Length: 144
Figure (cartoon, helix red, strand yellow):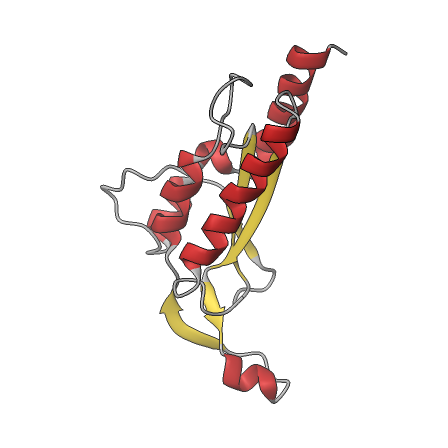
């Protein structure tokens, strides 16, 4: 959970490729992705010494939200193989005790993780909507 901003392209490419590969093999497959990022990155130098420290910079929260919004919500199984039927993006601040999981834009804005005028929206990517959405999609494709 370090270098999130630096490794974004590679991680995102793998996420898309996974959905693409599976949907090409089985069009109707209902895929869900639970992806977690830490608000603050771990300090890799401290980790080598078995110490948990955070780098005092916030990761690319808004970039992750927008990117996962783009691959969320594959409704028509004959199109958009690169998308997931449902994505959950867990944005977690491990610097707090207990760890804080963000579920709303308001929380992200209040903690300075996203600007007030952002077009990003975490609501459709939060944990609360994940399981009901996956089950609903499955039932609509395959029945109860």
